Length: 522
Image 1: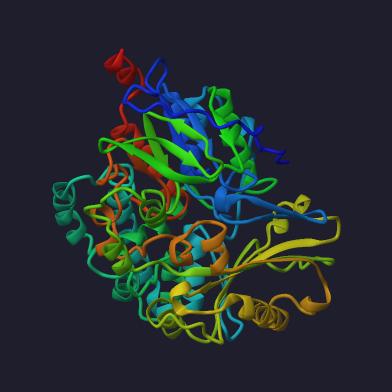
Image 2: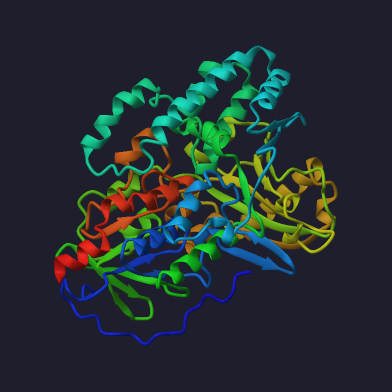
């Protein structure tokens, strides 16, 4: 259980200008934000000789992965699909520990249950034989095409994830070197376009392309590089952390503190202090200033540049360029507990509406809040009953919606939208739901902007199109300011837990080792 992570209030200290202000003794790294990218960055920097201070504006660590506790129900606020668990294991290994010392991960089967609008279901799993049989039942003529898609997904995975996810794209030449491989792997196609090369059945195309939505991408515009998700899930499975994803957060905080670092909550960063073109610390809303040798921002990349660097003349990520950037979708999330159980509902359910392409066009292109919706329903109590009181179930339901560019007034629309989702769930997966709700909480795109500091309320940063990926995405090593680094969904390689953990791994390549830095200024 998360304890009170709020550090004692500190009196403002004087910030003494000059490049050596933080460089006496052990070099100091400040990490802005305690999402998974920020926490992983802190562990890696601590292992490389830095004294690390993580600053979180909310009252608990985790950022979007914080936890809500209501009347005995436990709701993970954000990520619920854990893939590539070895990326977490690597962080524990850096601290001489095992992930299992602090967190119990269990496999989830099926990975997802898809429910089509006509009531047909499809269990999506990592069992090759079971998947082949499920495809045969759904689309008998597409079995061989499906197998070819899996082979294509593996080929993309071998390059896109194993070779490139942890590599910085600092220079245009870095991008040019991988273009032949991307062309060979048909990275110029969209996710939907690549799947359509192999299978003809429209329902099976949905089965093979919905995963890009889990990282904020429209399968009709997202680069087909993200088809690697299909093989990544088959390779390592889909897992759940017993007690909730927040157990991973608390475990990482423990690693940081064990290294001698600190995680301070209720600490809002107002400005990254820049001197002579280099990041030299941060100024907090309280007035306190913290000197640093390096600053790592786990905040949204557009928010970092637009809000945290007011005195910097930006050359690449100007306001005009950020305005032109296509942001990902946002999310409407309803967390709710029921005073009864629904044992037939899977851990992860994708409940599809009557439209696929049209709905995604409303969300991503027309920025219009539609009357219909497709939903992701998370029922953690299917795996871990301790997430709710005895005889109860915990849920959250997520609906992809346009970012705030739609002009939707969520103060007016949130409750009617929630009621519409409740009616839909009551009619399909959760009979009589509205009579059994025992706890309730909502998260809207406005909350993504106002509470989580996400530009335009977008939930995943820039949309993962080809022209907004790799070198085209905000770099892990800032192009604007020396000694400033970016991690998280808004930078390379992108959103999703494997992406944000890989963005922190890149710091091992681009940030000087603490011992090297200390020797250079001794």
